[in-house]
Length: 189
Ligand SMILES: CC(C)(COP(=O)(O)OP(=O)(O)OC[C@H]1O[C@@H](n2cnc3c(N)ncnc32)[C@H](O)[C@@H]1OP(=O)(O)O)[C@@H](O)C(=O)NCCC(=O)NCCS
Image (cartoon, rainbow, N blue to C red; front, side, top):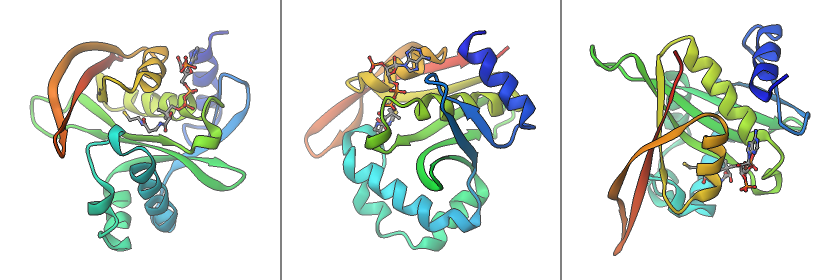
């Protein structure tokens, strides 16, 4: 059984809610974050921005100034999936559906992050595959952007079926440094 088919079957066994596997055959609990996860979500998001400032479009200095209530609102309005390690929120991925009349067939993945101690353990693939399964219930394709130098993330996305379709030159500017972004898509139909 391929990795993706195994994920799909576990997803359907779990009723689309809780567990998926990793490629190392560990089971990571994954679920949508809710109001009660607000503080843990805020801490993980700030850790991501502080540890990997070049990987994200947002910056730590802006986000750390936001009150907890704003993170809670973000969780309530958007789908953010969390992956847990022994009960601790250890990874996250955001998903939303475009809202315009001509682009609501498309979804977007953002904010992918896994705690460094778990890198290579498959939680990232499990989160990504969960977001793809969710996307399949709402949209026809999922898009994402990734800084071109972030090859580990690019390889992860490619392993889950995303393909690059263009590069936005100088997509991000931080001080005097520019970053190109690879635009990636996975068609679901
Ligand atoms: C990007 C990130 C989430 C990836 O998590 P990770 O645990 O490091 O990723 P994984 O180890 O599962 O996947 C990456 C590697 O495994 C490989 N891989 C993943 N799934 C695979 C599969 N099913 N089959 C074969 N290889 C696979 C990838 O090709 C890649 O290979 P590498 O070892 O040569 O680098 C993590 O590194 C992170 O949080 N980075 C900082 C924030 C960030 O960059 N976010 C992305 C913003 S776009």
